[in-house]
Length: 468
Image (cartoon, rainbow, N blue to C red; front, side, top):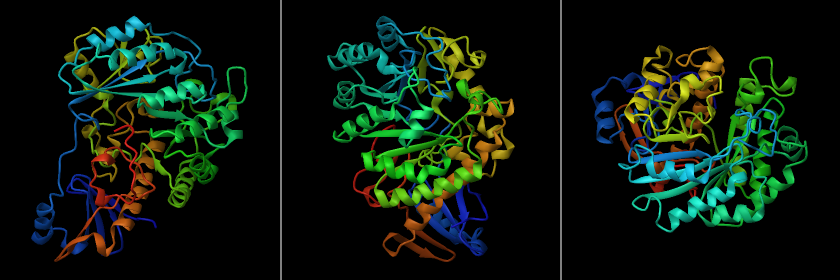
């Protein structure tokens, strides 16, 4: 189903259903209202929206809870793979964080003391190359020697080319696990070979199967290129068959080894054309419904946690620490040699209030006129500032490719929600010019904050709780 018109009504996203009716979505109340266009300004409609608490205020601090902080430790910039598009160019300038540095950061990073909960996320490079440091930190926390007054969770982003023992360690210790993997074996082996140009797909399959036999949730993050964009439905079926619960598709960006513009991976890989991506993502959603896997994307994953900024990197809720102990605002900016380091590196000992001010200035969605009435305004937050800078030369101008996908993939997700919500069993109220339904979250979508959605709003039994 296509939606010719969309936008914001009272700062809530809406889509046209037909010439006479729009569907208005409330991520605050988990409700959908069908409103007659002729009644948009009527007192009855406004009273119903108020009665059901439709309206809310988007966060200015990113999608994370305000009493929580995510500390991402880039424990190494080394990697034993040579993915053709790696945005960090991992392995090119290898540095490893010492165990002492990691522990000092967790003990002394400003801004942690007032938070109730902390997530410690390990990133790279390939973080499992520093598995001893990871295990030592987990032991320190579990024994009460570190962050003993906080609720602590662990996360990791890995390429999945790991031993069975390491995979089991992550699962046994409750890690939120994200595996970067690119689909069918031939494509995985081409796009993500070892540093010696060897195969990786068979080991990634083993890792996924190992994790699927545990009770720990995990997610596959698949980078979509012009080579793989026509196979999204097939990739969805493939990962569902291996037992993956959640699959995150994201188009390749021009950074690191992917280069820029036309100078891309020595001509091997390119960013997928936007309409081709949209059509194939829609097909993948249909397959996901049939085979029991949830799909997600940055283009709609923040719908239930509306925010006026793109991510938590702009706020005091996240800290990314490089192997050298520098505090970065972005996972891509991993050392002072990076071309964007002037925009994103501070000394970890710097005054935190100054840093937060700098981060907030780095991205202000409300200053962007183009975003004012966009249906995806509070799911997008004006786009990733680093992607904006690469695509347009300015952090305050959204890359047109990203803008198109944010708007149209978001509409796909809203369309799925609308179709599943418009059932007699979900109807809560009917009045002049308006009908209110309980929002139904389709079984083929995953979004941040789903764990807080009432059970009656969810069209499945199990909701993976990874990456809240």
